[in-house]
Length: 220
Image (tube, rainbow, N blue to C red; front, side):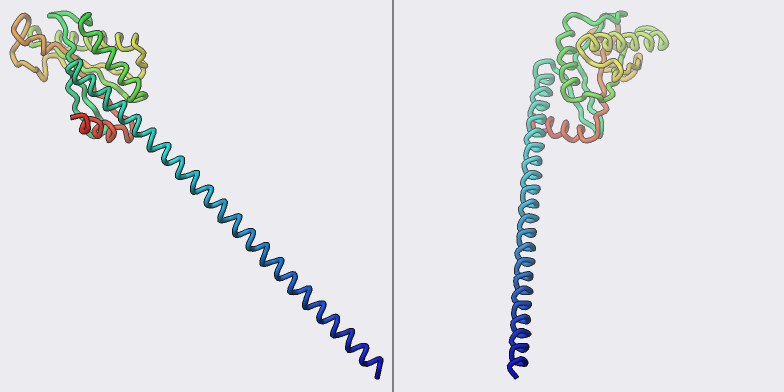
């Protein structure tokens, strides 16, 4: 009888110890799970905070770039008399750059405006294709004026390259005596100089067109 009682006590003790061990194991598992969840939540929070900080940096950088673009376009418009027209994925700059009759040389008085345009293009339109369009007054044949207007565009391109623009992003075209500012004005006629000009068409990289429109609108 005593042996049976002893065996029962031993069995009960073993069961109790086993139950305690199981509870301890469960508690450790729950604690480990809680620690892992807390670590995951902390890691997620840190990643979210890092993402928010990066976004704020990007927004601040975009705001700074936009302000710089607005100021530069304002300078071209106010100090140099440029007319700037924004279109989808393009910006047209009608600069007050003109030429003498039957001449393709860049004039001294126009060099400051061209230098400023080069600075703006380098700062805000790096990598964009810039087309330099040359024009002539109606004096002379169509063939001659096409050639002369192309030479004017080429002369402006060469000048811009000396001011730091990449020649690979510049293309030239001559339109001769088309798109006249002062129809019929030629040679020494009043206003004929306005027909002997160049304009720039900047094919903006993706996204830059919207920024340009915003800057122009804000500066008006």
